[in-house]
Length: 229
Image 1 (tube, rainbow, N blue to C red):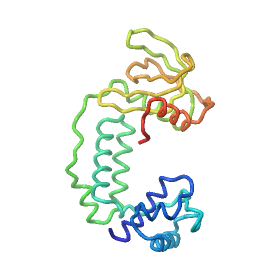
Image 2: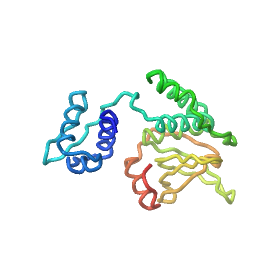
Image 3: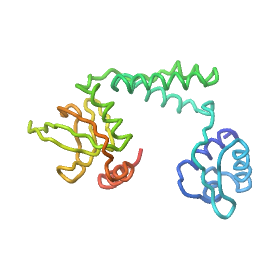
């Protein structure tokens, strides 16, 4: 492993920890000595990484530090390309355009050899069935999730029964043929899953729901035994 790769790995490990992690744990995960670890931390600090802590206490990376994308590995580039291509083909118009724009921005700052790898990636996203009525709903749902605001919906369930719901959307699941909103339902006083193609009407509100989105997501994952992605 080159030093550049090791420094990138160290940054990635620190990003996974929100609380200080000991030098010994970091060194063991990287397979290096403590002395080498301390040197690597000093190098990253001189490059602008806000790594706080000291030997015997632990280290934590403060948010805001971004390494240049020239550090991407070949497999990381393939993952970015494949994911962006899938979203560009399967997402609504705005999300698809955002995926294409993001990939173009990444390509613009990559060195020539890695740019060639990105543009020539042979991993392709196959065509899929169109998602009915997704274009107008999904941008509104994603905005409500980002802003942690309630939405008012009219929903038709699998038995064709219609109901009016006020929900707190905190996740949107993308499947091959459907999109599913994960939300706290005020009517049922529980987390429910709503297929976007069964939402007959949707009205955004500016009312913030009382719990944080991350707290709702964490509780749902724990209840469903779903590992964080």
